[in-house]
Length: 105
Image 1 (tube, one colour):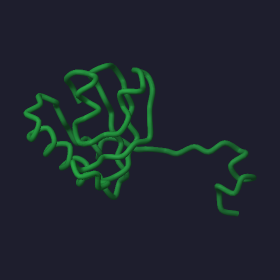
Image 2 (image 1 turned 45 degrees about the vertical axis):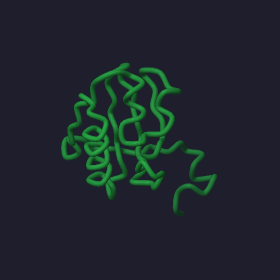
Image 3 (image 1 turned 60 degrees about the vertical axis):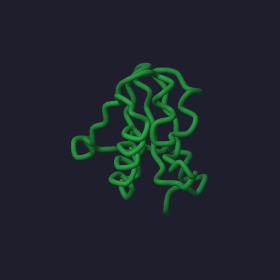
Image 4 (image 1 turned 180 degrees about the horizontal axis):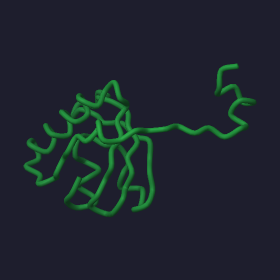
């Protein structure tokens, strides 16, 4: 995603991305203008005008569509791509996660 850092947090109703700096990530939600949740995602702020958004797999198409609709409604020049088939996500848990009940026995 390109364009200015603070417009990035409004496009598609992404919550709270103005509070984090480049090099950081945050779990957030994509919302409709009415406040309905479109999907959850992790947003990586790679640079002020560069975000990598990783939506929940089940909602990827809906999140991309919401971002594209928000871009059109705002008349924004934000660039959006959907390279979800080019990436894989691996969640790694700490050894203590088992003791905390986060892993099945």
